[in-house]
Image 1 (cartoon, rainbow, N blue to C red):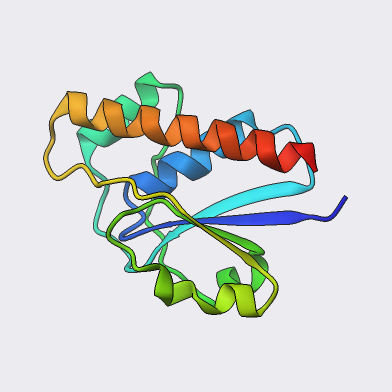
Image 2: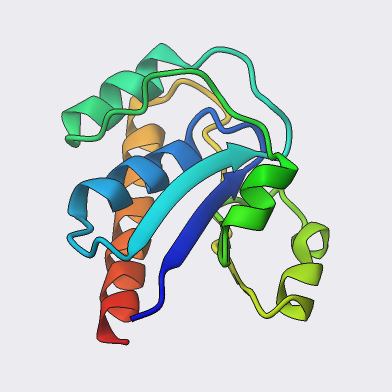
Length: 138
């Protein structure tokens, strides 16, 4: 089986892409599939409510936000944009290089509303579960 290197991307790598990466790495049992995350912009410190809600879902998103680098772009062969505020055209060349691009239009949590944060986490978890199933069918 070929190796799959997934790069989850959102705007700042503060919440959505971090949740996707952490949850994927938690549920993934396939050693040939690796996941990392980054932001189009390197974000400011993480939001405490988002960290707490992710933790209550069994997901650790602590740590420092990461920005996209040429090293990460070379490493990946699948980009998943986990955001509705990141234009897919930024990664339009991915297909040209034989790599894949998937877009999940997940809205960011604009406020510290606990229910909104929970809803976003659950939405990302469902999408990650589906992606994990699809990748392991191959």
